[in-house]
Every structure is written in C-alpha cells, then in structure tokens.
Length: 72
Picture 1: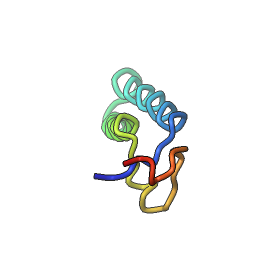
Picture 2: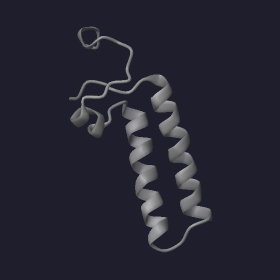
Picture 3: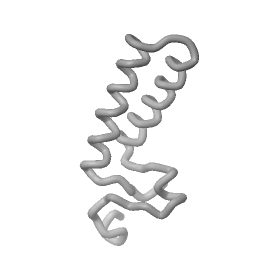
Picture 4: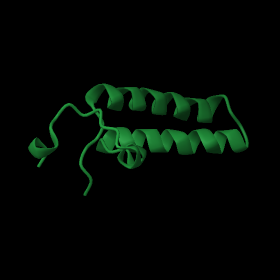
C-alpha cells in the first residue's frame, strides 16, 4: 500500500523505544500516563514492524536507503 520510508537503523530505534515505553507502561506508570505510554509504544512497534511511518510520508522524509524504483 505505502512505500517503505524507514531505514534499518530508524526501525531499530523505534523498536527499542517501543519496548521501553511498553515496559514503562506496565511497571512505572499509572493512570492516564500508562495509557499514553501504551499508545505510543503500540505506534512505535507497529511502524517499526511494517517499515512505514505515516508522518514521514506527510513530511516527505525517507530514511530508507533503497531507491523508490527498486522497492517494487
């Protein structure tokens, strides 16, 4: 559907931050902050897994080293 716009390093950073936010949501936080951290963790982990960031698409950012013509 969308062309990948995240590179390997970007996806790795998102995965690590997502896991950290998820751990914080289950261990350190409570109330509304727990929900916020859970939503942020979910979004980071999903974008890391699929390699597409909708915000990057809107802003025209691409950290993927592959040329768009070679992605298909």
